[in-house]
Image 1 (cartoon, rainbow over the protein chains, first blue to last red):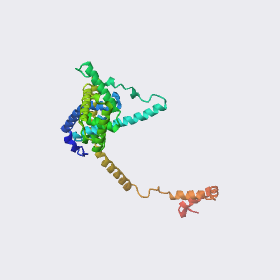
Image 2 (cartoon, chains in turn purple, brown; image 1 turned 180 degrees about the horizontal axis):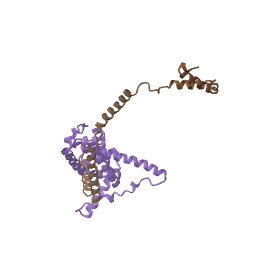
Image 3 (cartoon, chains in turn brown, orange; image 1 turned 90 degrees about the vertical axis):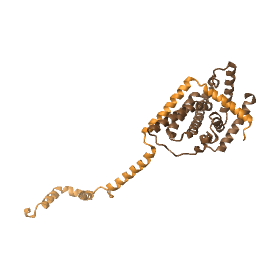
Image 4 (cartoon, rainbow over the protein chains, first blue to last red; image 1 turned 45 degrees about the vertical axis):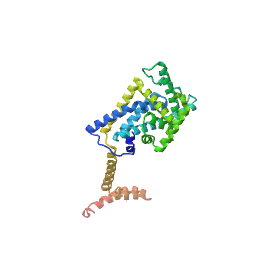
Length: 202
Length: 124
């Protein structure tokens, strides 16, 4: 990813999408989306704590990427895709916030997301002993809760850098901020998570 | 801000756990992701049938300019309807105060008009 960092600057080049070029572009997009979709889903799921909502957000991000940026050079797709996804997640949180205020006004439960059972969505690793499975699931559950509790920008920086593997330049493009800001958020996120989870977690 | 060895170890473990959870997503979820991907790729085909946005902006501008030019050339500057002068004169006459007097002698005026229309040699 670092090798293409220089190309993340806004590119205005567009290629003619006709015939063989269009077919090749479709194959490239299919390969890219297939590669990224599962990690994107888990990242969205950790952010919104709801798998169905996360699936909707990922689909929306896929559609927007294809509709708007299919003609962009392939190395730009990952940061652009995650930028769309992160914007979608932020919008989702804003809508939830408004919805929760209205529900509180009418005297109902503040959020259905409170009932989200992280353990029920925990991985089911095959080929391990039940103890190992339990330990892995428990470690991931704690990590999800801790990451989900980070401030928004720290959570984004941590997940894009650690889970998706974007470099600093790609993360900056995805978050719409400077590389220095990414480094700050990421560093704070790592220290905060280490503090919360403790050394025994490792 | 430098990453310590403990930070790196922590990040490696977090990444490993995350990758593990990605690898073990259930079949129903994977199926939905595949459908979402195909749905997104359909947009490529749709986009191929649409005119590019870059076309519409100048095309709309040119069409608007042509419409304005057409209107300016075709419609005369004085757009007020032509006034029927005799009718207007009659109307003024009706509004005058002595118009009722005219109605009382309508027969006389009709005869006068006929007499004016006939050649002089028929009179008398």
